[in-house]
Image 1 (cartoon, rainbow, N blue to C red):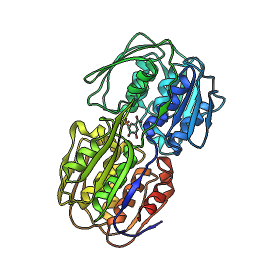
Image 2 (cartoon, helix red, strand yellow):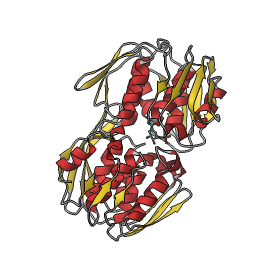
Image 3 (cartoon, rainbow, N blue to C red):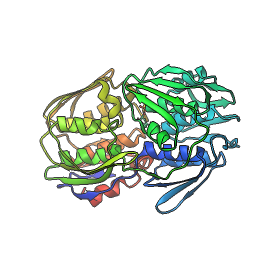
Image 4 (tube, protein in one colour):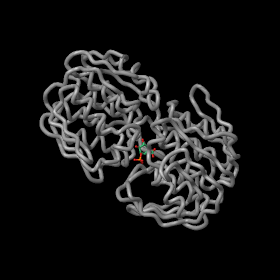
Length: 423
Ligand code: S3P
């Protein structure tokens, strides 16, 4: 795919539903008593993998033009899958499902694509085993995972990394455990599981970094409206900030405080982002309007990292256009995402002539000189592909993106929206 530098990006857009919330809506809807209508569901490949896994365990799930309808089978109503549960490229499906499967009275096998088979699962296996789960993984750390029936009991667990996937896997297993489950986070990670549990009547308390869950008798289905995904909005926030003359509104974006690190960082870099029409149901949402402005480099590290972990590739693009030095640190987790996102961004931005240096836990970008177009690899990683497309919009000369179809993981219409805006 060829991308040419474009004129101002103007107008109002809607980006697809939040990926994290869409996964959880299907999972908890499946385990609830009653029917869950999900509107705004993300029809991306990752969330479709979650639907597929639950269908294989006997859950009836319908898709209409506007909704996904999940006919809940209750906490103990899943049936043994006849084949391997295939989680595709989705770390969220794999890790969260592992927590649910650990509590079932049947055995199951889970596997995913080549990228999933390289992602660490030991971080989930370890606490689940402490709860009594019986799980085997390749080298004790990788898919395929084999999960056998066993009795679980609640534990107190201090997370070694601020990971919402890990936290959620333990909380989901906690639904099936005898006694309380307590988790201590090193820094706050996204809390969509906790919020959805509360909405479904589960007793779960958060005090600072400590989360305590009491296993419920059952979950009560509620309808769920999925906000637009701030991680998808991030590409347009950066595009609007770096393409001269742009003024762009993104509607109904989820602005849960555990996800808004991107807004804090872009504003610290000098971006002009306004929030309007705020409303708060189970998850807060608002419209975001970004206007082009001059950016400058900043330091990004510490507890903000889990609040913007998926946005760091596109933040690196913003940093390439920002005057001065941007330092990203404490972001080792980027090396175990869909690709090694530190080395991927360093290699690709180097091709564009950006002065960028890889560090153990992040990168240092000395920006301000307009990057030039190049032929970019996507590393089969949706967020790398979309970040480089944003760079290409404001670069000097044309760019080529190889294997752009990978955006279908989280944002199937990404390039259409870009074109609709004049990109
Ligand atoms: C997610 C949590 C994050 C994020 C991923 C989705 C979730 O991963 O990178 O895209 O839905 O819980 P970690 O929690 O492992 O950092």
